[in-house]
Amino acid sequence: MSFQKYQSESLSKVTLLKSNASKFLESIDATYQQHFSIAKLSEAGMSFQNQELLNQNPVVISALSASQDAVMLALDDFSNVEDYVMLHLPKMEDGNNFGVTVQLAALKQLQDSSEALSKSLDELSKYYTARADAMDKLQL
Image (cartoon, rainbow, N blue to C red; front, side, top):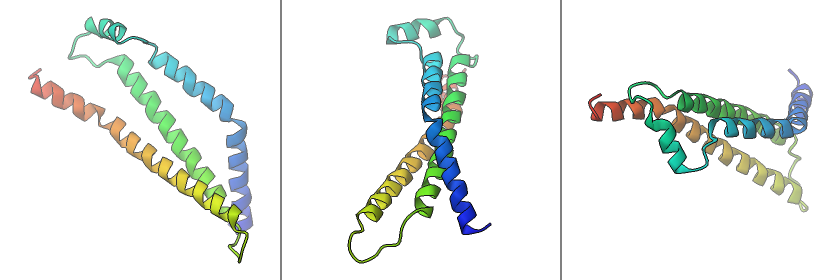
């Protein structure tokens, strides 16, 4: 694949991402409202009070799955934007490199955010281990 073709593909991915950003944010908001609709801690306690401890909590499992999907999608989008920024980085020359500096700062921020999301994804996957440890400690 030639560099120009790869560069144009990254541009089309970022353009598509940009055009679908509002729909994506609306879907994340709808998913958040669906899985985290309880506004008060007391309501949460009452909703979980009637469930047996040994049964898996379908609300938590569903929210966990939706969160993992959203994080993976965001990581993929971050990767596409990183590719775009890196492929469209101009050469640094003597003087007037402000635009390059801004692009490098944006790239650094994208990489930091991507790393934070990766750590969040790792933490989400630890739910089952933490639940099993709690069940073991309670001897259930």
